[in-house]
Amino acid sequence: MSSPHAAGAPAPHSFPAAAPVLAGHAGVPGTPAGSPRPVPRGLGVASVALAAAVAGGAVVQAALAVPVVSTLHDLVRGRSVSTAVLAAYDSVALLFGAVQLAAGIVTVVWLWRARRFAEAATPWWSHARSRVWVWLGWIVPVVSLWFPLQVVRDVRAATLRTERPGLGGWWAAWLVGGFAANAGGRLMRSDSPDVWSALPVLDAVAAVALVVAAVLWARVVREVGDGQRAVAPAPPVGSSWS
Image (cartoon, rainbow, N blue to C red; front, side, top):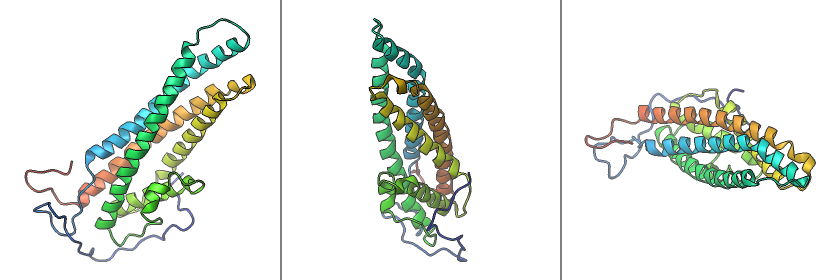
């Protein structure tokens, strides 16, 4: 799926002959006017690392899902079995949730700063959503299905000063992984043994989708970071943008 334009997305852009001159950064001697600072590399690295950790947690859960279901069925039949695998699955699930929260916070901070850079570096580029949706787009029901994609799409396009396809796969993988993981969590709270057998399938789908999403997200972060450093001038002597 190529980078989609949801309803309300701006039309393809035309560029002026020269970009408007913006105010330079206070406290950064030697930085020319109109030269925003790139987002620190470490923030992007942290976002990618946490996305990878989320994917890793999903893989571990998927590996435990089959023995978990087997143990649950044995307990229902009254057999005496070890419940260690159930405790391990619950622990991974708790850690998975905590890492997801951390990944979400770090990623939104990175995206917020990338949006500010894009607006300063390419002020003529139109964004489909206002800044507030950088934060709210991920949590407001219904619109969370496409607003974050639009925000990321426009930040990348404004930074690179061109529209590129390729975000649809990342976003589809993220949605599928999230839906499958949530469905697996609800299934585990069910008292019906008949539905437990679906857990390995849901966890496997979540794991594959989140691994794909993490890989594609790393590419997005790299592209935006490279675009920022291409637009920004070299940092003053004795300092760096990292």
